[in-house]
Image 1 (cartoon, rainbow, N blue to C red):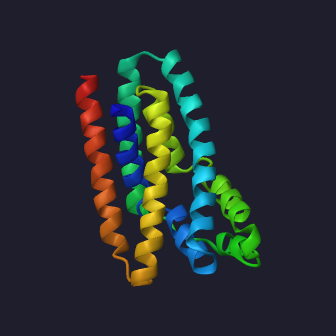
Image 2: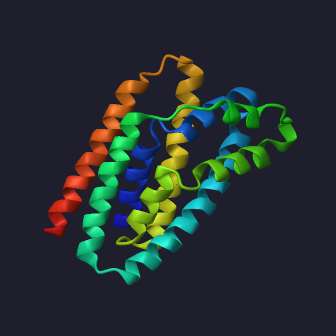
Length: 188
């Protein structure tokens, strides 16, 4: 349960202001919410399952103390990455153009799967899986990402483009720095 709660919180925070959250809002303006969420959930579950497997392999191969130090450094990096922010490129927007409603789930799932490979949420899930329970990390990281993207869809539809993106990025970065400090303390 600890792995589930921790990974849900970490990935939810990691997803705030992320490029895939912007993609979720964009897709939700073109398609119904439910197919978009189904596509996001399927892609996220697959990517995070891969991440957990990779994290478990790394966790088994490396002693706990170095993993905690590496994880803390990674979370500092995630915090800095979050401060930098993400934006949709023209290529990302072009991928979403010209897709029919009946193919929305496949389109959203495919785009999200590709966008998440190597993304900070994937790397954060790998990091968590090195020391936390695998099933809890997988389920929690999937739930955290889907919840953040669902929130983006709902808030985006209500508020349009007036989201306080800078404040969200700063808050999420601070949370990563706090997680990094906790990991450094545990390693010492």
